[in-house]
Amino acid sequence: MAIFPIVTYPHYSVILLNEQTNTRILVIDDEESIRYAVDAGLEFLGDYEVSFAEDGIQGIQLLRDFAPNLVLVDLVSPSASGMDVLEEALA
Image (cartoon, rainbow, N blue to C red):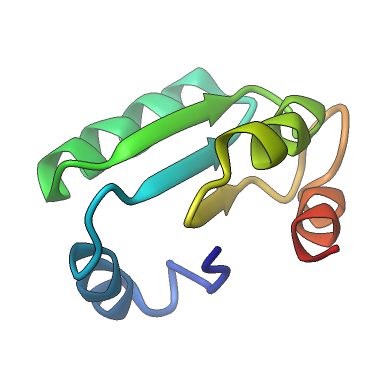
């Protein structure tokens, strides 16, 4: 699973993801508009298997079940913070 700041290195992120096939991406954000925008952007960039979580708790469960290659996580979430999700991902 790749964890790196996609905002800081967007060109590197896209190149790295396009080298793989069947790349699974997990997007964790409580705002529907953000999830929609990310989905539209990823659809434009390539053919990725994308799963969405509305909060950190659901995101942690999807980390286990979905086994993503990349996780995009909102650091401020009502149930479990993005840092909680990242700690779980690295555990």
